[in-house]
Image 1 (tube, rainbow, N blue to C red):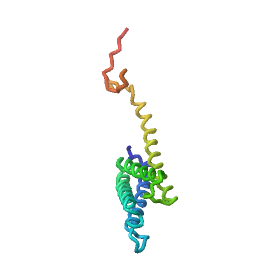
Image 2: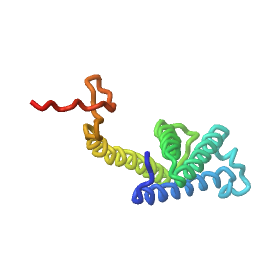
Image 3: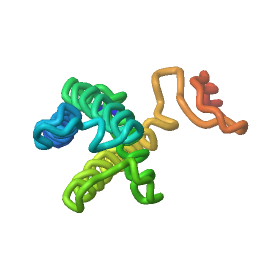
Amino acid sequence: MDFNAPAIGIYIRIVAIISLLLGLNDAARLLGVNTGATSPLTTLGTAGFVYLAIFCLARLFAAVGLWIKASWGAVLLVGATGVELALYLAGNSDVQMTAFGFAIRLVLVASILIIFFLRLRMLRPRHRLALNQPLGDWTYGAQTDGQCRYRRRRPRSNR
């Protein structure tokens, strides 16, 4: 995906900030900020602690990737959040989240998917215009085998 368009760039930065805040919230849960004297390992369980650590790191790295407008940040965010939501919806007791956290994760996945589909929509007219455009003696167009390549135009006969 090309995130260099100004409007998409601002939208991506907002998604990156949301991803960063969600990752930092998960990191605080890993450190046991709100649990008092109770260890987060006993609160979450071993599997829940490992899941939360993986999702936390993935979201933090995705936030950095989105901030620098790299496409791997969007892929990482959709992958990690999609797996987390799938585990939660499947009823895995190791993945815990509130209704608000579930809604935020849905918004993150939906926003990245919207950007992906908008980018595809923006690319389609550009490629359609580029086909069969004359380039001097050369033209770029579709062949009978479905491939697009440059070919020399045939000279017109003077009949």
